[in-house]
Each structure stands twice: as C-alpha cells, then as structure tokens.
Length: 175
Image 1 (cartoon, rainbow, N blue to C red):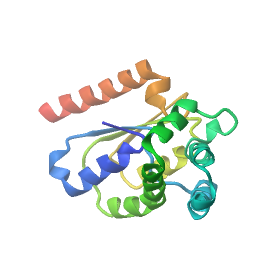
Image 2 (cartoon, helix red, strand yellow; image 1 turned 60 degrees about the horizontal axis):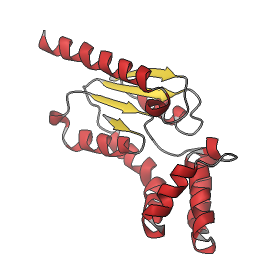
Image 3 (tube, helix red, strand yellow; image 1 turned 90 degrees about the horizontal axis):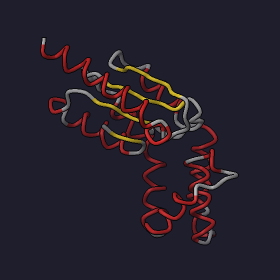
C-alpha cells in the first residue's frame, strides 16, 4: 500500500521486484505532473534562488496541492519548513523527474492486481492516474468524493475499499 508520492516508490519496487508483489493499493497516487502544473513546477525550480524560504514553501504547496492556493494548507507548509530548504529543493527536483520514472515503469506490464483509490476533486493527479491505468488491465479504479488525500479525507470508505480489494484477491489466489 502506498499513499500519494510513495506510489512512485511502490511502482519502482514493482518494476524491479515483480515476483515479490502480490497486489498493490495506491491512494491518491502521483503519476506525474502534466500541463500547467508541470510548467509551474519548472518555473518554481528556475526561480527558486530568487525566493525566500516562506514564499518558496507556499508556492511549492500551492503547486503540488492547488486546492490550497487560496487557503494554504498550513500543516503542509509547516512540514516543508521543518524539512528545510535543501530537502524541499530535492523534492522539487524529484517532482520534476516523476514523469520520466513512470515512462520507464510502464514499459513493463505487470500481471498483478492494482487498486487505485482516487479523489474525484483531485485536479492535479486524477487524470494522470487514469491515463496510467488505461495502459493495463491490472487496474481496478475507485473514485471517491475527496481531494488528493482520499485516505485522509474519507478514511472509513478508503479502508473498506482496500479491505474488499485485498479479500477479493486473497480468496482468488487461494482457489
């Protein structure tokens, strides 16, 4: 199970060790930044040296979680501040490279069940996750009423969906 950006790590593990993964549940997975969000990340990267820490953290937050543009997600900004500028710049660089990672990962097709639980109001990552899922029959997609962090916004529903997915695939594999 992987949440948000950890989906990159989970997909990487699946790519390199497919025999060790029986199934995969991804909540609000990040399958890349496209369009205006990719452009904004690139601009932030290009002008990062011109920005003070607070402005840098607020912009990174607003780009990566755009629903917070007018109501900043202060715990997220506080977390970025605690990480420190150097670490957040590493995350920014990593965010710019995610699309390249997924091009590599999806060259291989995997025959394991993968559940994507997506927030229907996630304006950054919903479409990229749906596009990734279109490349394989391995995906089961559940879209629920939430923003990006669907497992946090709808924890009971998310847990129910994940549990049923695991039970379905555990029973199928035992038969």
